[in-house]
Each structure stands twice: as C-alpha cells, then as structure tokens.
Image (cartoon, rainbow, N blue to C red; front, top):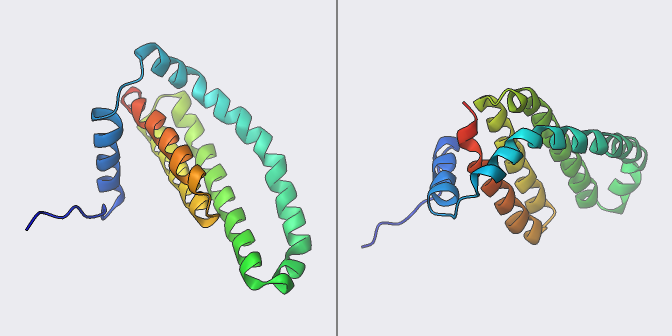
Length: 152
C-alpha cells in the first residue's frame, strides 16, 4: 500500500511543506527583484494599511449600525459579516505587528506577514472566494517564501 500524504499537523510542518514547494521546487525570483521586494515591501505594506484603516473603521461603524437589520435578514449573513470583519482586523493587526521586524529584516516580521497571509486565506475561504483563495494566496505565499532568506 502506498504511503499516504497527510495534511500538516502544525504550523511548523505547514511552513516546511510550503518552503519545499514554493522555494525548492518553484522557479526562483531574480535576486534583484527579491531585494526590491524586501527594501520597499514594508513601505508598501504601511501605505496599504493606512489606506485600509478608514475603510475598516467605517465598516465597524456601519456594521454596528446595520447589524440588527442583518440579523433580522438572516442570522447567517450577520454571522458572516462579523466573521469577515474579525478576520480583517486580525490580518491588519498581524501586518502592523510585522512592520518593525520587516524594516529591520528580522525573522519575526516575516512570520507575522506569513500569518497575516494565512488569515487572508481563511477570509477568502469564508467568503467562498475560490479565485482569491487559490490565486491570491498562492502568489502571496510564493513571494513571501522567496524572500524568507533575507530575514534573520
């Protein structure tokens, strides 16, 4: 009987599996592109976070105002909205926590961005956004793992 591949049991196994496929088996990005991503990535992340913050705060305000109507319209809709908002906040917090480490090229900053990407994948799955889940998450993880060696 052939040895069955199982899903990773923990985050370390998942990281090892992703590194195997996204670094060792996938074509590598050119070094100059990696350097550009590492140099300007934290700044781009900061700018995108600042742009997302007002939208998220507005969503909190509108979400609080319309939540009773959403629940009356169907509990599933209200629950999905709350879950979506919670995942967005979690992702934003992880990205915020990543910034100091990304600027200093520390491994902890890379880890927080990795976790933020995984939270984004869960958010896509919750929304049944299959294209975002597969394509967006795969591209994000590919780039993150390609630059992993720059963080110590």
